[in-house]
Image (cartoon, rainbow, N blue to C red; front, top):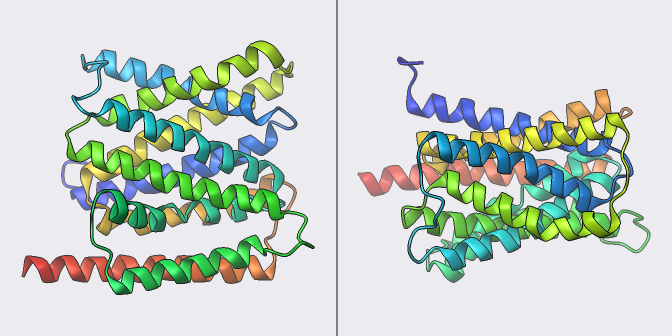
Length: 295
């Protein structure tokens, strides 16, 4: 890997994260009728062990950077809401790819929240792209009373919004020099602490296969989190973020082959094309804009 450029390493890492997260979506479904809170707990428990081991191995502090604690709490709160929304949509929607594309609205909401809270400018063309992406999401959600998946779709959309808020906090803390491994540790610990009471008072017994699937959910989630963190240490988001949308392709493929031949409907495909198309355009636009500023 010595002769491989940082940009290529970043692309490889972000493709790995997309593959890990698509695996997580499949194992969430395969785990069956386990309550959402129970799935979320085990998803974060594995990540907590891995993050703890990583911090100990690298002899790094278990304390947040000065001024970052409140942002960790905000990031963890909205991030956990995002996980619940994504898990509910993934479990209840007929197509896991639909849930995945709704979760991929997060980059657009990161732009909005960064403009509101971090005072980063959103250019007119970016604002138009956000509006078009929102319209694309409506094709996936299909907001009519006749849509039996309306509530799960809205949960998936809210999950994407919440993830955008969480990434905004991560971005802000990164600017302050916060350790990415500690951010994963804090979020995992917070999530386990919040969901643990549910397990203590209303634990649902699981079969050996369900235990295995939830362990794999946690392993995939941890792999995805660390891979995407590594990706953005190798290269800036403007150069590699578009590759994260491969998650939708991986999820659609795994849904077809491993989850009973899932095939999204025509309107969902229209939404995919709109959202992914806008994402590609923003990727190209941001790269051109960056080169112009450097010139």
